[in-house]
Length: 285
Image 1 (cartoon, rainbow, N blue to C red):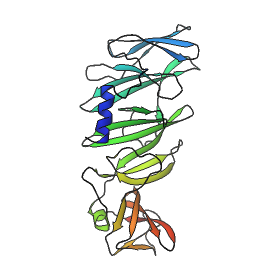
Image 2 (image 1 turned 45 degrees about the vertical axis):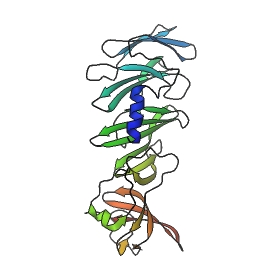
Image 3 (image 1 turned 60 degrees about the vertical axis):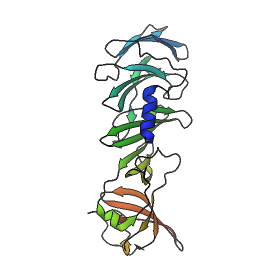
Image 4 (image 1 turned 120 degrees about the horizontal axis):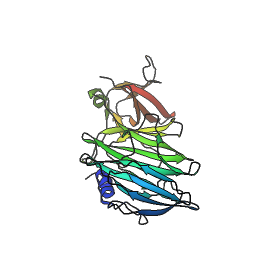
């Protein structure tokens, strides 16, 4: 069983839930403090939604759930934004292994709940928060999903009140040209290579590395897969699509695999005399 299967199994079993959570799986009322001087009770409904009433204002809302095939949701209280107060979280199984979510966060300005939306700039792999796990130590939310035979991971963090995509992976789809140019060691439990990227809150790519696509989400700086040059000579270009260069790598040079764009791969080579050298090789079929 790989990392994502373990995580998803724990989530579905409820083993990752904080001990202070109250659950609405069986329709019982959830009673909790929303913010300073604001209390709430929430009643799960038969249609998978939940009815929330706040006090002392008396304001009432009905929030949609995250429906499974039968229209059911499992409601719980989880401190998703790490402010000491719980959010309302609906979970529902989708297909055989995926888990959809709906997260509602209290908005003090409007004294109401709003669906938590993440800014991804289109770089996420799962499309929505799925199979969510909450890591208080690193203040990180991890979303996991499966498409076909592959598991994918997106990680999110907060910048103030905004939730943004912090790290994601994309499966590396390159042909035999790459195998002819580079060689890298691969263990039995290692999956296909993927491009991992770390993003700033505004969507800028801060770093990238090519690593195991089935491994655990990396902590700290990204580190790329180590490889060695197989071909007698591999030309190293300044950018993808460039047509001329004087730089090249030779057979046996050790490199770190960093990024991929339109069939070009970015490599880092530590030259004994010139120090770190980075460039792109053409691995299009």
